[in-house]
Structures are given as structure tokens and as C-alpha cells.
Image (cartoon, rainbow, N blue to C red; front, side, top):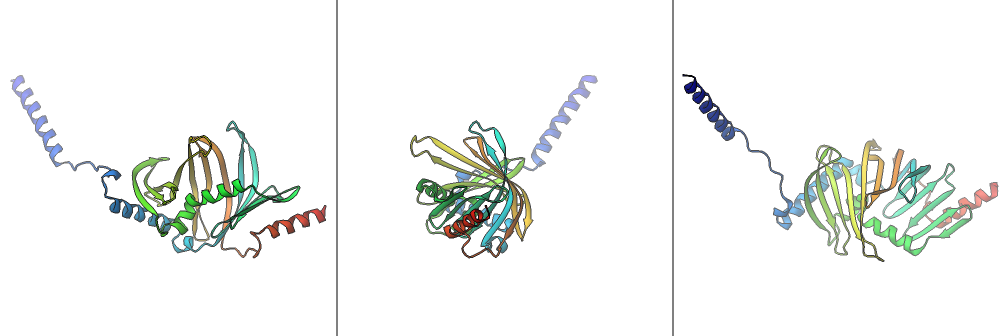
Amino acid sequence: MRMRQARFVTRWATWLAIFFAISAPAPLRAQNPDELLPADSAAKAKAILNQAIEGLGGREYLNARNSDCTGRFAEFERSGSLGGYIQVRQLWQAPDSSRIETGNKGNIADLYAGGHGWSLDRGGVSELPASAVADYQEQLKTAVNMVLRFRLNEDGIILRYGGTDVVDLKQVDWAEVADRAGHSVRIAIDRKTHLPVRSVVVTRDPETGNRIEMETRYSNYQPMGGVQTPLQVVRLRNGLQVYQAFFDSCRYNENLPADYFTRASLDAYYAQVRKKK
């Protein structure tokens, strides 16, 4: 009798297992990006990047012609250890001008504009090396804000869907943007917020040919002037942290002086400082 009951229980458990196996919904399978045709992959990547633009502020984000951010930069030793923090004011103006002022009084600055670069320090204003200007121009090609604001509709841009992933405990979609000159950036977009959380650029050292991977992480997004702004930005070079910024505030579409991104503005500022001294 007991054996008959045991066989019945076992048979019943088997039937239940088969029933639930058949009736349970099939698990969702992540879409393999390599299975997509190039046109479908490009369309999916474009849709993800358009969602990112909307998440960042849509028209407000695209129409931002300049930004003025203040905060702190971390200084790192060659070993990668933290050396301290400095006050910073970082300004940007479309399409390619940048001015970074450091120190409590902003008395040290690096300025890039229109394919030129200058540096201001306690000794005066000097031209930045051509290699530094070239590096800056190269970095612009794969900067997330430049890609999303200006490059997506360029002729020759190639888009590719990179699949799903989990980054910083967030489910993301990867989208790759490349051009015919060989510049390429992979951007991870949070599926929930549609905000960029990471970007990866791989290049080669021109002297050694060694692989260089620059990874940038974006976090602590806050709405400022209608634009979702990452107040913490971290950059790693081959896994070693080389840059960290903590911004307190960012303002967009400020009425900056017309000559603010010129060498003349640095020369005038230096003359004022010398006069006061």
C-alpha cells in the first residue's frame, strides 16, 4: 500500500513538473547584437541614442550653446593615489571651445578654441604645445556630449547596437558610434532613466602601438537649467583612475563675454593681476 502511494506521489510530482514546464512563460533571451543585420543594428542604436538625448533634456539639451560649471578636481599621483583636490571652474562653448580655470581665484587656466590652445599661469600666457591641441581635438571626436549634440547626423557616421549589460547595478544598452576616420566610442545607456552611465574609447599609443582604453563614468545626475547634468565624472586609463570631478553647479546658456574664449581675454586677465600686485 505504501509503495503504491509512493509511486502515486512520484507520478503526481512528475506530472506537475511537466505541466509547469509547459505552461510557464519562456525566459526572455537577450538579443544577440551579432544576429542583427547592419541596418537593423544601426536603427536600434539610433533609437537608444535618441532616447538618451530625450533623457538628458531633449531640446533644452540640444540647444545648450554653453555651460559654466564649478566644483572640485581630484589630483592624482603617477601611482594613481589621490594627491588632493583643487577648486575648478569649467566652461564650454559650442562647438569646440573649452576653458578650465583652477585655483581659488582662477589664476591658472587652459583654453582651447578653434584649433588653438593657450595656458595662463603665474608667468603669463603661453601657447600650448601643438600635441596638446591635437589631443584635445581628437578627444572631442568621441566625447559623449559632442557625439549626441553634433555628430549623430554627420555623413559617414556608423552606428551599431552593442547588446545589453549590467553596469553599476543598472541594466544598460550599449550603442557604438564610429566614423570613417577610425574614431569610435561605446556608450552605455541606462534602460530606466535613458541617461549615459559609461563611455569607452579604445585607441593605440602612437609611439608604442599599445592598446589604450579610456573609460568615463557618469553619475549623480541632477536637473539644471532643464538639462540632466552628471555632477560626478570619473575617468580611467587602462583601469587606472586619472580624473575625477565633483561639480557643485552648472549653468547653461550664460551671457559670457564675447572674447571669453580668446587669448586676448587671458592676456587682459593677467594684466589685471599684475596691476593689482
